[in-house]
Length: 420
View (cartoon, rainbow, N blue to C red):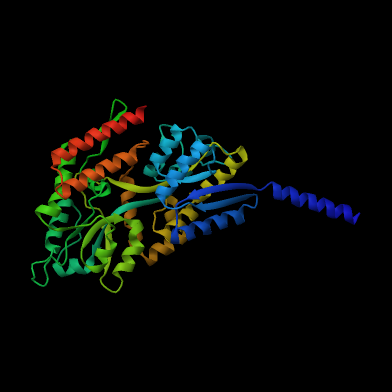
């Protein structure tokens, strides 16, 4: 009798062991971000004994993108992965991304209408292609104006709220303190990149592409784009108030080389480290120009239709867990990204965090005005073209007319590839 009972227990235990569903999650979160994600995965696994999520760090975003595209060809995709929307567009075209409508709107395991609309609208729309939902938002960041408050106080300058005020502040903050003919402090740090151009272009009411009769076309030969490009050129070359550097600007900012720069909120830990013991700082919303629109950055999580039905259901539970108010609040606190749900701001953990550091809520005012990139597979290539255009103009390698004409032609070629 005892032997039979032991045997029965063993069979039950083995049955339970074999019923565990594994979910493989490819991501590009290293360092402290990776540690925070590992903590979240561990908590989920503890709360869901029938599911094991395995987080696999595959390297930086470039490596992750290449590996996903290669896996789509070989048929060796994970269950879920981080992805920018242009990656998702390519993978949708390859026919391997799982449409999530059936999960999102499932009456038992999905979101209620209130929960779905609780996700900030720009983040939600960035996960949709028409009425089809292909992703859930994950690590999202916004751009802000980093400000050396000691430098502003010394110069008697207020934090600029508009672009004209910003230009005036940059002029007043540019100083040759020792009178040797060399600028010791620049008013602004300028990265000659597509991101910098796109931020100011959005504020100026323009865009890199626009839709005409349902098709994307280049939108660079416009008054808004030309005015934006000239503005950046003038900051560096006409007014000479911008310190131009291709790399991240947290270092020069911390050293006092630049008094202001526009960057992602994800750079906060680096600014804190670089500025510690040297000067006080804060951040503010990016200055208003013709609009308050500003791009946001970051990835989503997508599911692959190559997974089994059991794996898909288990993956959905984890994806929903990642976007829950408490978890997205915790993720934001640990990493510097913003919560993807409005109700996350009402959680106890977020309120305690914001009470200790009120600065964290400043970027949130920009979320309703956030705009996202065109959801097309060739967006990375187009970004590269525009980045070269911006760099060439600012460094004087091409005239504005030459650079815009060349960039427009190349973009048209990439858009034709997208249609094929």
